[in-house]
Length: 130
Image (tube, rainbow, N blue to C red; front, top):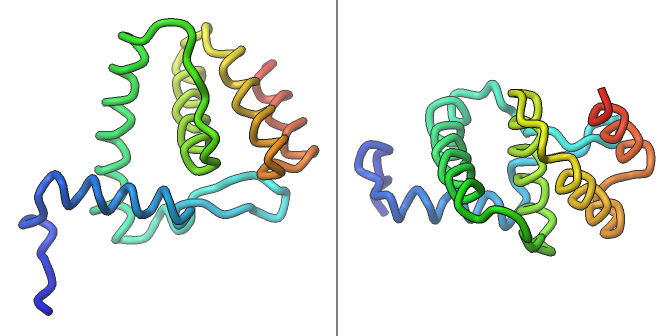
């Protein structure tokens, strides 16, 4: 089977690849403090392939957020929740102040699903209140 070069990959190929990474949880791991972190964010593959794909998805989701308004229903998929939490935390860090309730709701759900430890939850809440 011949390998597909990155430049030859279609948008569908890239979307499928990112979906596979998200569905399998291949992008995240728990660090020694129980916090979710990206796996190997400094690798060449991450910088050249995965990060540009994730950045594009983040831009699309931000645009969707602007059009959705209030009343967002949270998914139960922990990978989707983690990705959404990462996006919201970055948006909050950039100055968006209207995200606290949604961030807390996602953290509550991750705690309920035992994806977050109590300590990681507390750390996120402390970070959120800064």
